Amino acid sequence: MWAHDKIKVLERGWLSSNNIVMLGAEGATVVDTAYVTDVDDTLRLIDEARGDAPLVRIVNTHLHSDHAGGNAALQARHGCAVWIPPGESELVDTWDEARLSYRHTSQQCPRFTSDRVFAPHDTLHMADEDWLVLPAPGHDHAMVMLWCERLGTLISADALWEKGFGVIFPELAGIPGFAQQRDTLDLIAQLQPRWVIPGHGKPFQTVDAALQVARSRIDWLSEEPRRNTDNALKVLLAFKLLEARRMTHADLTALVEASLSRNAVMRAHYPMPPEAIAAAMGEQLLRAGAAVREGDAWVATR
Image (cartoon, rainbow, N blue to C red; front, side, top):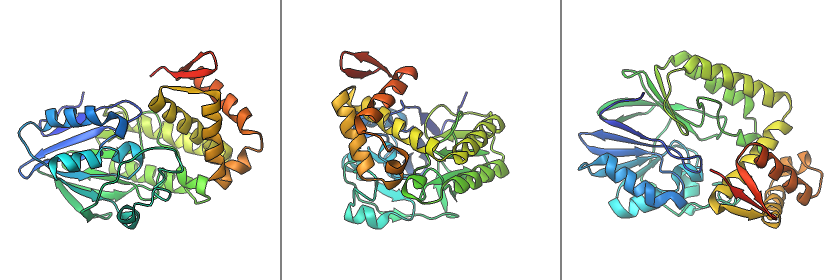
C-alpha cells in the first residue's frame, strides 16, 4: 500500500483523475484536479490532504477535462498558480474549447488561466523532492509524466495504468499515436520504477506486469485501428453517462452524431446510421456492467 507522509494520493472514480497532493516547505502542490462535476469533493479532499499548508500550485500532466476540471475552482479559492505542459498554452490563453478537446468530446472544463509552461526535461520541486518532467505522447500528444529517481516513483498520468492506458486520441485525428505509446512504455521500462502513481486507479508496484498488459494492448489496437475507434467511442459514451447518470436512446444517438460529425476517422470506421451505433454501444455498456436499462434509458451503475 502506498504510504508517504508528504505525498497524498487521492484516488478518485473513473469520471475524475486522481489528485496527488505534494506537501513541501514552499506549501502544497496538487497534480491534476479531476472533473468539474466532482469539484465539491475535489475542494474538500484537497483541503483535508493539505492541512495547514497553503495551496500554492497546480501542475497538470495534460489538459483533458478529467485532469483539469478543478483548476478554475482551486484557482479562484486559493489564488494558486497553474503550471501546464507545452503545446497548448496558446489554446488556454484564447480558450479554444474545440482544439482543447472539450467541445468535441461534449465535456466540460471551466476556463482557467495558466501561469507557467514547463517542458520535458525540466525539474519540478514538489514534496521537497526533485521530479523530472518526461514526455509521454500516445494518449495525448502534450501529456507528460513526472519521475522522482530518489523515490523510484513515477506519476504516469494516462500513459500506464495497472490494467492498461488511456485512449490513443491522436489516432482519431489522423495523427500517429500507437508508435508514440510504445515509445512511452519503453521509457517507463527503462526507468524501472518501484512505484507508479497512475492517473486513474491505485498506486501499484507490479510495473512489469502492467507493462506486459499495456504492450499487448497497444499491439492489439494497432493491428486493427478500428478497435481504437470502438474503444474511444465507448469511453466517450461511458464518460457522458457517468456525468449525466441517465441517457435515453435519443441522447446516446445525439452524442454519437456529434462525435461523428467532428471526426473523419470515426465516420470512416462507422458507415452506419447513428441510431444503430448508439444501440450497439449501449449494449456494450450493459455487457461491461457500466449501465443498466430502464425502459428507453441507460442508467449508470458506477
